[in-house]
Amino acid sequence: MSYFLEDLTVIDAATFLAGPGAATILADYGAQVIKIEPPEGDGYRSLVGRYPVPYHWQLTSRNKRSLALDLAKDEGQKVLHRLLAQADVMTTNFLPDQLQRYKLDYAAVKAVNPRLIYGHITGYGDAGADANRRAFDVTGWWARSGMMELIRDPGQVPLLPAPGMGDHSTATALFAAIMSGLYRRERTGEGCHVSTSLAANGVWANGMAIQGVIAGQDLGSRRQQGSWPAPLGDCYRCADGRYIVLAIVNVAREYPLLCEALGHKDWLQDERFCDITQAMQHRDLFYRMMCEAFESQAYDDIAGRLEHLGVTFAEAQTMADVIADEQLRANGIIVETGEDGGDYPLTVGSPIQIKDEPKLPPKRAPEVGADSLAVLRSMDFDDAYIAQLVRDGVVITSD
Image (cartoon, rainbow, N blue to C red; front, side, top):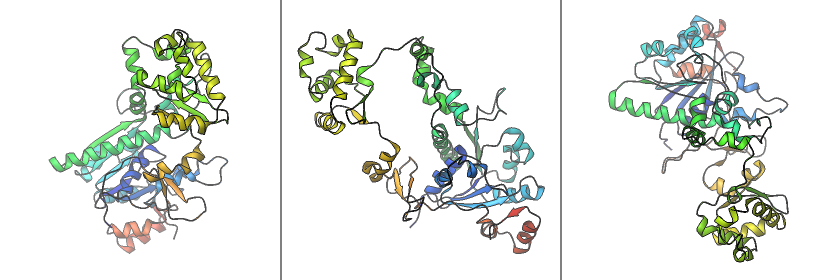
């Protein structure tokens, strides 16, 4: 079987998550991705805390080959430059001083390969006072974007989000930038520098609220002053402990149907709740009535009626629910790996689908340096030179 991007060679010289995540999407569509790691392995491998399985590493390192290379050595930098001369794409998230140290700044790489698409992830952008400042998902995407103001209760400390959320969206943005760069190369014959940042993607994700502040409507400040409930756009606990999220926008159509689904068509006969405009005049009471109506019935009963009547809702699923979700499996969102049992029977598919273009079946992430020798041989390094690189500790192999 052929794959959309199988003719591309990608040097994944990024670490942790957002940059490697972009390379993962390229690999899913068949690109030949070479993962560059330090001799001890990418630091992301060991970021498992108390958990014995590096589950996160499997997600963003599937379908790649590992080349363990010591970039602190001049010869290691020469090896990488030789690889880049034959590559189509490079990803990196090194800070500016690291790029200079390893001779991987764009000017140096462009001199080696003018047709290369150079994909760079930063924390806060490549200009300004914070260009050399280290960032992670929680600092660059969440904290810097103002989003944490919207996910805390009034007067409380902001909640810490689940890890990786901003990284994965930023990875998708870098993938889009790389594909745009490849299209530009088709038109001009030249490579280019493309980039995105955690901060840019966080602010973009929070763009509705930020645009509100620009227009004089500070939603975050209002929330901290004590926000009013939004009964038709809230989360409700059912009698069996499951949760329903409402997202009713077409109020004129769906409000009467919601009342019917909850078994309270009588609300429509009450002048206080006969339509949503009146109900909002008694917002707090209406919200309590909604809570009571949901809490008195099991999820399946309410959900069945909401579905039948065409009211917009969803279950707030647990992560275990997500894995078992047949809709997600049918759309390649949860994907079988072909491994029976163990810690990798399933994985999360990358979020972009191209009709009639298959994705590479997920292959377990490699061990550190598992492909070092094979990669160098495939890139026309002779055996004597490879042996010398191994003896000198420039290249590490698991063989």
